Image (cartoon, rainbow, N blue to C red; front, side):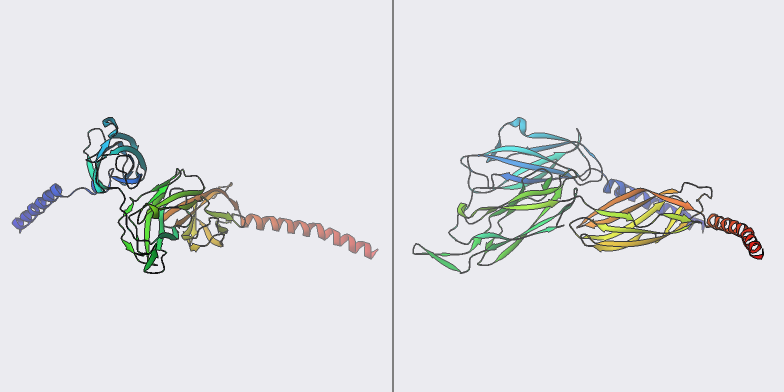
Amino acid sequence: MKIIRKNTAAILFSLLLISSLFVTPASAAVGGANLKVTIVETNPYPAKIGEYLTLTVQVENVGGDKADNVDIEIVPQYPFSLDSEANALKNVGVLNPGRTATKEFHLFVDKNAQKGIRSIDIRTKTGKDGPWSEKSFDIRIGTETFNSKGTVELKEVAWDPKVFMPGDRGTITVILTNTASTPTVTIGGSDFDTNARIQAAVLRPLSDGIVVLDAPYEDMGLLGPQDSIKLTFNVKVAEDATEGTHNLELAIEGNSFDYNSRKNIPIKVDSSNIRVIPSKELTMTDGKATVEFDVANTHPNEFNSVSIKPEAEGVRFYPEEYFIGPMNPDELFTIEFNAVANNSWSASREKGTNMSLTANYNNGINRHANTVGNLDFTIASESTKSSSTAVLAGGLIIISVPAVFLFYKKRKQ
């Protein structure tokens, strides 16, 4: 029996030793800085042969830790060349988790370049001695020309969420439609098909505070008469974005230069949120109270999964968190909590305590929270009220007895 135990222990120790060699600690797998690089704008798009091209490169820290000393380097290949080799490397600096930064690179397209798609490499790294991470991107050169006469138009735009809050992520979805109504059209005695081609579609922000997270769509194919296609762009609103309407530009490359178009896409930013207001006096009597609050959605959007959680030192609330659910714009709910003093409540407490309420809610996929604090939760005693009433009643009796006696005496005389 002893031998079996020793062998079992040895086997377990061996397994643990082997697993420690091959299994990465959870903290290492989950934490750490992680950079995601994207080309968010190519100007002009497509790139023109024999002219300069500006690439706007975005790097985002999608990891859990701060990224120190972030570098972006562009490695051009023919037919691209840098305006200066000194501009190949650009330093971003510190990039906190969830934050993005953009840098511009200027390239020249060789005058002998052929139309088509060419690749370019972009490298990123963190720290002075960190390893480089490389990713290849396709760049379109030149514009193909087709004899088709279909025209692509912007049919519909949808936002999710409909109104963004600062710091929100979401999507802008556009529906593009070929407005032609017949399969062919005759122009100048010649027949042409009315198919429409979407060679490229890109969404560009026209003001600070909005970031488009996706690269341009390319080669979206052929649309017959009245056919439609849906394109979705992921966007992010900066934490310090100003309130109001921001504009983006949807640039569409169609059958040829004559069929290219640019459309304005507005996006609304509003920081108004859930407001929580006491609707009656916050008073605890003999360690118990029922408190009541009005909850209002002051945002132009519907909020989802709205809940209110109260807190106060020495007090427990029932329910611990009040779940409301969806709330439409300008909708008002009145909610109640039962408050009970717990064991840490001091009987000698005279000034009451501070109470706070935290509203949690979703705007699209974004979770938000805002807190109302420093609400005065005052203290009252039922026994004190009763004794005061008794004293007052006793005083009235003492006063009334002589009065009755005097009145009776006068009547008797």
